[in-house]
Image (cartoon, rainbow, N blue to C red; front, side, top):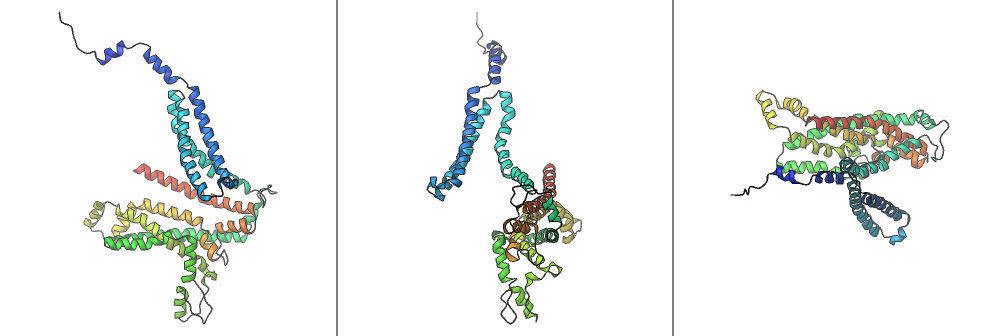
Length: 395
């Protein structure tokens, strides 16, 4: 009589397992681990307390660290990186102590919570406080009577409307010119040899490495500089102007037709054209070659190919560059502050805020100006987010 040595199947093994094993596993997954939850939560709280107090100590008690900025920098780096790792480790342990279903639901939000908290502390709270202070007095110690008095003064001030008009000019002119020059330079550079393209793009991108203050100083001395009549004119603009038989001009004081504002805009266009060129050049290189060949086969000229084939396919990049430069233009400050400080009808919103805040010591009016600028920027930001979502949906 022979006995079968066939191994049991998976179903037979499962059927011979203890009937209470599945219930025990379910009970373990559904159980709360209070000890792990407590020490994980305490670890999160202690880590946050320690990091916060350490950075406060850097500011208020530098003598504890021998007044050494190097030591405080090293400790800050260690506390920032190590503290973040420790915080997420304790947070993970606390979440793992919850029942399995609750753990899976909370884990993504728990790891997003520190980032959202940082955004709230660094962005949302200051925004709310700024709006609140815009109804306060010059020292932000009491509300105005009536509370909207700062806005009444602002909108009744002719200098404010002049600054608004200048901002509109900057918004209309600078982004459009920057994008147009970026497209032109990108197309022309792509037609050069590989080495010529590299050097030309590097040369045009170079101003991006210069700060706005340094660029303003460069243009003030080398381009817009003024010397009295009869003296040598080292600045380019007056050198050309006097060579034509005219008297030297103080260009940045001429507000006829807002000429001085237009000359200030040239500096920002010079700084940002390289940024536009890099992004637009990458987009142009990404245009499928078969669409270009199909247009050539159909008899389209190079100009028609550029405007009817290339431009529509890089329109997303064009809009992105345009909006990025637009947001920068709405906050422009450095160039105006360095060269004119708002004199001769060149003032803009950001410079007006700086003057009210730090020169006139009018904190309430200054924050009201910031709120106006914030309201003006919000539609642009919403449109940019909408465009990004649309582009992501099309991919």
